[in-house]
Length: 249
Image (cartoon, rainbow, N blue to C red; front, side, top):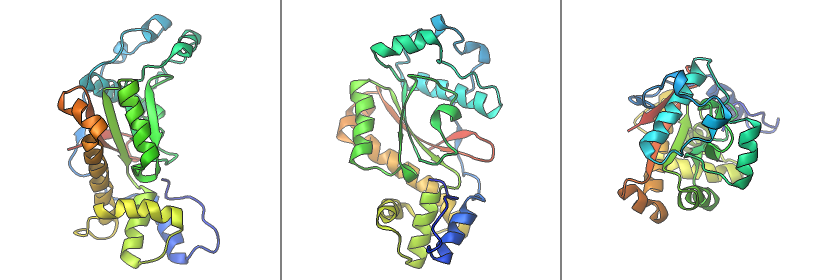
């Protein structure tokens, strides 16, 4: 959720200050692996025939495709794939996305752009701070069970306003609007009290996305597929500074 959302004049000064400063960025992510190895640009589909090529069926294939797209995005070499008239007609008959991306609602982190993907590629589910609820869980389960998607990527991001708000409320006891309080309550168990200031927010972003990943992997609808190697649930983080996605162990 964007941390520079405009707030009403009646909002307490401390909360306004929080929302203004969160966008300035927190410390960079801790240890994390780059999201797979970048593929050569020549490997990406460029025409209608390529767009209708074979389906991605394994978690490793899906991660490589996301990695290649993120490499194109952050090096300003986007291809905007899978937008042709041919593909649009073919998609009328159905969809076969290769990954579910659970991301934040933040306007700076749209998954289709961050991974340079096109129509029919990603099943995108977004909630502030990647918070889980029944609608989010049902949407992810639909992608896995009905569309047989082999990868669920939980995508956190630097300077998450939802996490910053949760940390601030925990520290100060300042009341939040009811709907935002629900988000903060879901994030609060992941707050890293061993850190201070911006470092606490940053560490909590990582801890929370890992916890969401853990909960998803344990979901009864998903756990069997994870155990069988048919599905991977991966935690990752997008850095606003360099536009790179890194997986988190």
